[in-house]
Amino acid sequence: MKLFKLSLMNLKQNIKNYGMYIFSMILSIVVFYNFETLVFSNQFKQLENLEVASSIAGVSAVVLSLFHIQVDSL
Image (cartoon, rainbow, N blue to C red; front, top):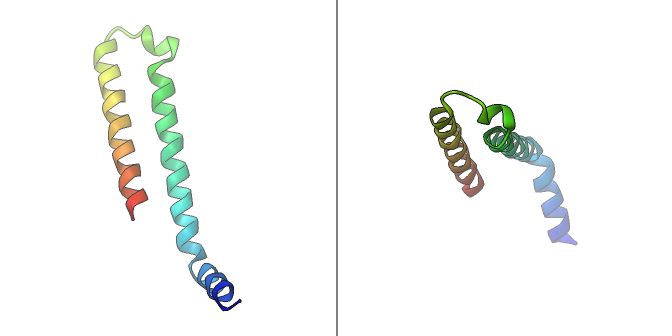
């Protein structure tokens, strides 16, 4: 019972840290999903400079995924 009480006390003391971590993780996943759906949308494919816009969106998705991996490792 002491271990459960200790973990519960730790959770209560660090709830703000856990909340910010979960919020940032969810936000980065949402932004990554938006970039990925943008790349495969029909309106995006009809752009004149498709190669440039597609590469920019791809690079943004890679940077965001690297940021997400870095946040996960903390």
